[in-house]
Image: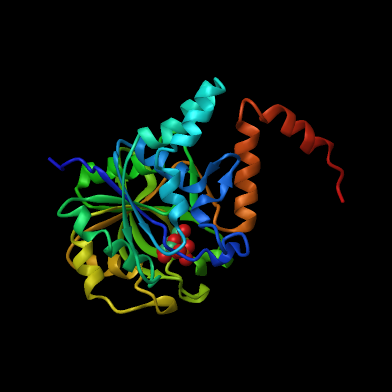
Length: 295
Ligand code: G1P
């Protein structure tokens, strides 16, 4: 029996250079999609997937994230006095619903390095990793889909998505062998190898790793033994490749729609789609979009 995964690690120490100048003084994780910061979508996905322990790896200039998940007495007081119960509930939900811890990554030395910072707090148990600029809209939360595979095989699972060839170099890319699982074909792969940010001509497939992982604790030893890779950084993909030497790693082509909200275009697409779906905004926003003239 595989024990239940409880912890979700959120690397959030990156510099957010793809979103400058907005991210010069504000963490990219706090960019709002409609009215919720990116990281909150990830945290809610983790909670909806049954994970209650959130561990955020922060860096310099990231205190807004800690404040966001903390209780704001002034705000609570103001909303209470004004009788804004709906807003009060939303604000309280964020701080009440989760148990968050923070670890500092002093230098941004890569995703693998960030995950390694979680070693002491995670201990010897499997855990999830969520990259909050990958926002995934899915009926069953993406992380839940990966956890189901993990609970079945007791192994590491990464989220996969097919991406167009010309974009493949922005991702970790896998070479995998399809595995039939509960009748679903071409969703689950047993990974043979993987490479971080390959050149188009070197990419082993069009299956890219998306920012959701369920990792076994042995990943920490792997991350400790690898050298810096693409971009001179300690890459999680390289750690996983090292882990593959003696542990199986699965990839799951999840059901749902992913937005690259760390990219300006992806962020705009997510904003429009999420706003259109909102009961309070969807109607008037749709009317507004319809009324726009083609420039
Ligand atoms: C990271 C990972 C990469 C993965 C990507 C998904 O890259 O290193 O393997 O494909 O997230 O979003 P980054 O986007 O931080 O460059």
